[in-house]
Image (cartoon, rainbow, N blue to C red; front, side):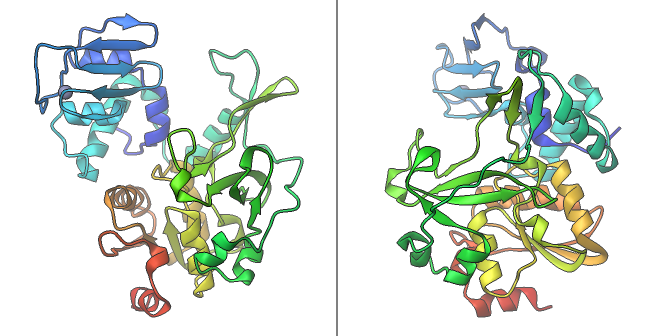
Length: 341
Ligand SMILES: [Zn+2]
């Protein structure tokens, strides 16, 4: 049995309806939706009202009775009484689902180049047009304000802002956000992320980070996938002894500013097989990978996911930071104490 699992890919491939049926749920489909009694073993609340709803296309669920919600993998884990914090057990559930429902997803990191190639050329069932993933952009954002108070207010020096080409954008899709250029592993600009500068404006419709969305262009569907590369990975030119992996952009900027230029970010909690492969190519066989994640639940999940995927290939050390803190809260001395061993 394969021991590799790409959580995001698996989540996308899994047929939620089939998974629900596997767990004995009598699926009543209405468009994309299923509504019914909550099947979760931990369900607390009224048993006789249909409090559970699932979006079968998007692979997500929510129960208004017990408050549980999540994606298809988390659903299966809850049905198996697996603690979502338990990385190894969660992974086992995912592997079982992969084995049962998506055996074609098997394969180790060696296959990911081929898989990436396939991703680039595959045609989605619902879409007649060919899909292109992360093609190079044919434009660059101009006139970004590098002096905007947001970045300085977070303690970033002009030199850091210049190095990462950051700037406040006053127009277009990234209006009122800091534009963050994203380069693939070859250094090609493949898109921009935008970070809100006023956290008070964050909402469901105005997320903290905005990434490029799917778009149609010249007979193709252009898709952006952040799991296909590592932020700042292209600046690490040759395999290094020590590489820091973080969740987000700001941590990479902060580490750079404090003398740790060999830092990359996964840009979210999903850590993919492709990113694992890239990490392995960036670190010498005798080198070390340092995980520096936020001191919260999602940070710990991220760290466990990296640990599970990278540790078969490289020495990995997880730097645990205090609850409620982020890497950008750490002073230079503190960082030094972590990385000096
Ligand atoms: Zn429930």
